[in-house]
Image 1 (tube, rainbow, N blue to C red):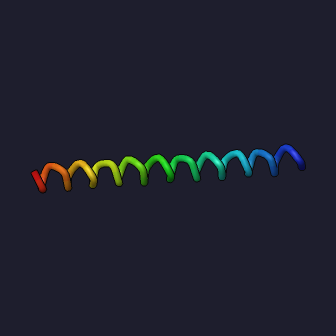
Image 2 (cartoon, one colour):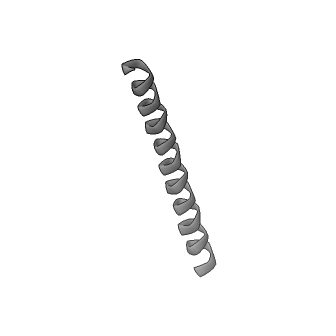
Image 3 (cartoon, rainbow, N blue to C red):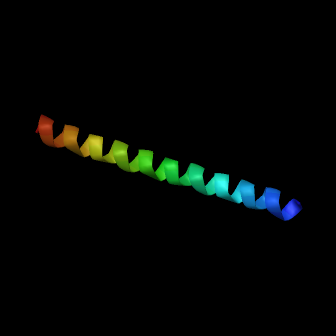
Amino acid sequence: MLMLSSMKAAVSLLMLSAKGTLSLLLSAKVAVLLLVLSS
């Protein structure tokens, strides 16, 4: 039972970090686009 809950926690942490990296990549892309457009 303990193993299952820890697995769930690990999976949710992985999902959160994946979402974080995705949003970071997206914001970086947007920043680059803005820089290119403004120059």
